[in-house]
Amino acid sequence: MIADHASNFIDKNKNNLGLQRSVVDSHIAYDLGIRELAIILSSQLNSHLVMGEYSRLIIDLNRDISDPTLISEISDKIIIKGNLDLSKNEIRSRVKYYRKYHDLIKKKIADYDIKIIISLHSFNPVFKNKKRNIRYGVLSNSDKRLSNKILDQFKINNILVGDNEPYKGNLFGDSLYRHALKNRLHHSLIEVRNDMLDSPKKIQKVSALLKKVLLSSIKHL
Image (cartoon, rainbow, N blue to C red; front, top):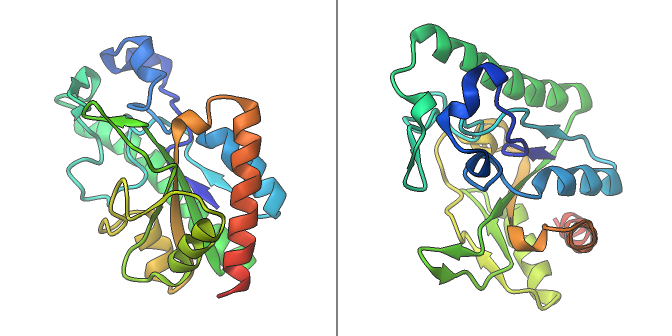
């Protein structure tokens, strides 16, 4: 199990990238509730877990190394002042975080002969002043073997779920492309609406559902 955007950590010497603390504590900087969910769910499933240790505003671990949004200068209409006109040395230092994360995933796969990767993310309940009605999203690329099983299980449990919503899952060079699709491993990305993760009780409830859904989906592969 992986959680690319689990942390909003920014080094103290970067002065919050010129952002207000409220922005650093928002969905702009990381996936709200995902760290806690990933820890609980991976424990319940007895699975290995790799989580990002830095805010996606430092460097987005779920992007290809050549992606122009790897270090974003603007996010959700907010200019990230601390990401403007970066020196080559600063970019190299951030890329080290990126390589460390992906090297750890690669090592886990090799050391434990991992065959399945689940990526966890969360999304905002409102986008462009419009409420998103889906509670969960299952994102997939060209390999939909596991994602289709997960979608089926959500529907069996009468859960409103989006198929490649609220985002598309076919981003070239993202974490699942890099570690799962290229290695022909079963994989899927699950998005959880973040208002369902804003308390320990809610996180426990979501974890219990995802455990049930994932175990049933894997059984039917």
